[in-house]
Length: 140
Image 1: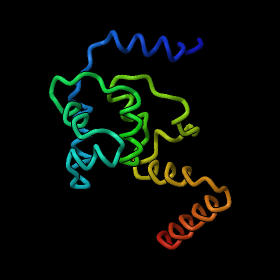
Image 2 (image 1 turned 30 degrees about the vertical axis):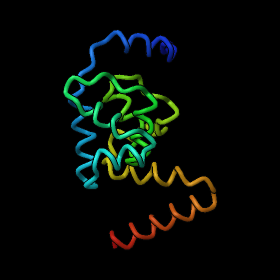
Image 3 (image 1 turned 90 degrees about the vertical axis):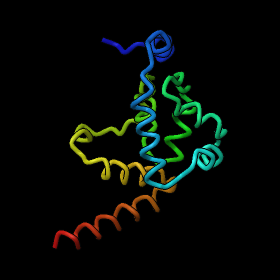
Image 4 (image 1 turned 180 degrees about the vertical axis):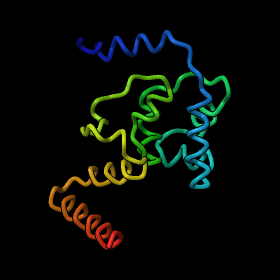
């Protein structure tokens, strides 16, 4: 069966009730880990701090997809995490194409995603090899 088009998934999502608590909890967790204020997050992520305040309200409206992506980029997490917490469909462009990804700890996924962001293939390969050297030393 073919997946529904994204436009149809978005329409379906808008009809569903939004539970803001998981989204708020994750946002507060990430802010707490880095000891960030709403103002800092707003300004540095490209959003207004008032947007952050509104997102953290108990009965907040569903954040739009752009907000989810900007926040994920700012915190260095996979945008699909925020999209999913907001009830939006995940986007294939943010998926890592590996069957074993579900078995990896989040830290390993974060490292892989960071390495994947390196635009120059040669530099990306060098960084990956450096990580492997460190891991080899750790295990020996």
